Image 1 (cartoon, helix red, strand yellow):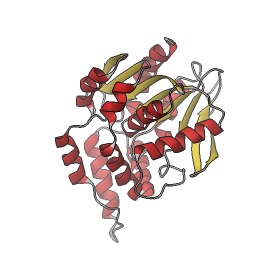
Image 2 (cartoon, helix red, strand yellow):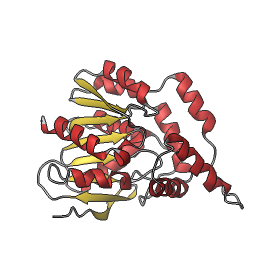
Image 3 (cartoon, one colour):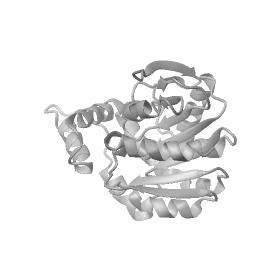
Length: 264
């Protein structure tokens, strides 16, 4: 039986949130939160692999994919609150939660702000950034502008290619278009992550947390420092994987999530 991912919208006080759902089995859902500037589309292969293990939900973060944007500037807490409202409106009383990069920041915020809502938490590429990393990333952020010659598209293409030179063209194309669609929300999301008290929130969590990263992930360096802040943490490195591990090695990610969340 082929996995069928359904798409829909749910209303929140801040506007509509678009989501993907694969609800073949019963039980607490596994919610998947994407990186900047992607969408729930990055999880479609992962959702299919986990279809017989968990019901899965992959919302688009406000301002990304097909979800309504928030006014600028916004905080990670703002994003987490809208997504929590969306999940609650979909009938989710508790869940397993997985976030990749910016999605990991939002996931920690949601678990921190809503005790009891998240049973177990998995973070891929936890964004625990030092001052030098933040400064380097800030230097790369530019306001969204459209160029008559289309160079804004080729520059985004080149940046994504640098992150993973072997990324399939279809995924590069998807990420370029999603970045352009997000416009200034992408830069605002990075600024929000830089301002989040991520380490303090990690330290306050009293649930099992898996921190993981691809061996070549741009946020690989945050793995052990993140683990050190956790009361009930464990860590995993996925060999020969980069920042697009959910697209490139979904089988390895699915196996890790299956082991960790089934332990509940």
